[in-house]
Image 1: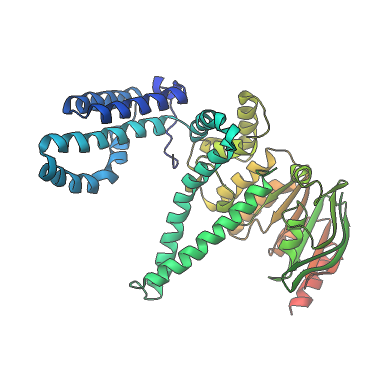
Image 2 (image 1 turned 60 degrees about the vertical axis):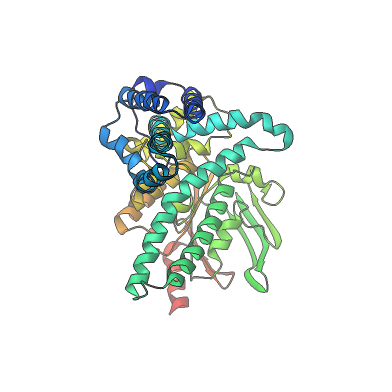
Length: 198
Length: 224
């Protein structure tokens, strides 16, 4: 969701957001419930077919899986040791297939459409005091905070190096926390100014 | 019209605004002052972001304390750091976020978003991740997200501070053509040339209130 969306006109792009999210939820639940190498193989085929139907470049799809590499490297030997090859294929395969399927959904669906689905899904909780719009806003802000904090971290890291304090965790954490709190304060003001609380 | 009467604001023991009374009917109003002079707090009182400790602020007869929501619908606010204003992941979504509570049909939202992005030369970036825009484009996006609501008044608190001269000029050229009343808080004195009236804020008071040339001269004298 962090700006992953790739505009397009494929059938997957045009499918309603609720349908894609429902398919993702059902598919991953089935993978976990069945927990067999055959189910993982079928899931992988379906996710790959969806990525192809969405006309996503292989490089883009692979980029979504790349951050998993260290989990895979750590999980495979552990699963082989604790449960054998079958367990390793099921556990690691389920993880990779689920991330690929989720990436297909986020690459082909605008964040605002996903938030609309979330808002509608949470509507019944209004009766117990939950504000769905507020939950959706919280999620949007969380997603938005990732690049902001990444940029702040890079900038603070540069300042730390410029002062020759590369090895000082305090020189990283203190300014980063101060910047984060300041950003949160300014964002709160901006949201108020945009009438979010009205 | 914006009207302030005996506005005092304190942060703890510190008095930031000290009895300011103003009527602001002009279309283009500039505000200058040293860091910590109170100019940003003054700007924030204009749409109810800051409520005065005592005194009143009214916009077209609406009191910011009693009718804050109505005031904020009339008064758009642009901050100096656009990163703190952008909420949604992509450009078009962020502009549309401003209309989220308008109950407009989806097609109308898309049309209005498209129009404002076209006007601000951001149409080609509609689906681009907002965090990857340049600083100038981010500030244009922040401005677009405010103007899509068509406010009567636009308050801008140092909107060009983080921009280079070209982007600063692009923003001010765009603002110059807006039909809205504009209150511009800035350190860039050359951006005040086109103002109808400039306020110099010093230690929480209005130290000068004059056309640009006289006000800037008074400000320079204060800073000397």
